[in-house]
Image (cartoon, rainbow, N blue to C red; front, side, top):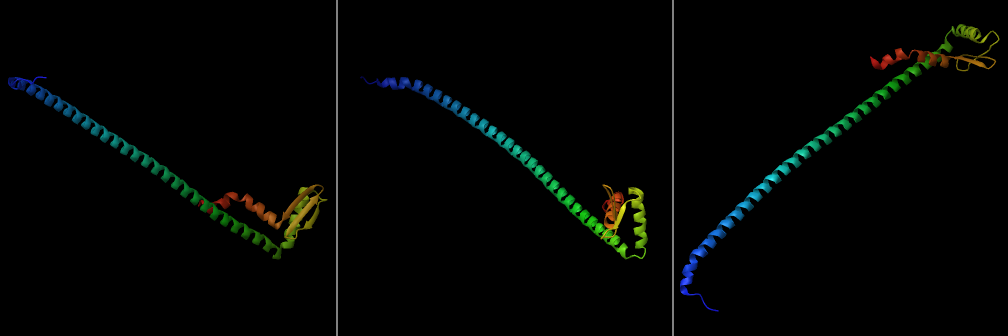
Length: 174
């Protein structure tokens, strides 16, 4: 191998300078391209992050609305159950008061007259041969053949209360 003549170094200087300039340009282009790609990736990451946050907010709002709707439904159901419980208590108190009033009729001086009218009504409905007996709870029970008529005081009170359902319902609708 032979060494390059001394003058060749000076002759190669412009080539070296051109290669160096080309490498610098190419390096700058690669660097600029890399910076542009990084900027695009950062921009894309910011957009994706904003989309994820917006989706999370929307999902959170939907979950909150659903949770609020469930709480509201539960509260309405509990309130309705409370109202029904109170209505049942009022109705039970009314039934007890009506039963007590019906039982108290046995102590009335006109109770015998009431029994006579009940007996008359039983015979109108079942026929004159109906067998009528006094009920141990007050009132009468009548039989004729396979037919039976209960005109005991608790049964009359219960039936009367049942026919008064519209009036009774005003206790909780007013």
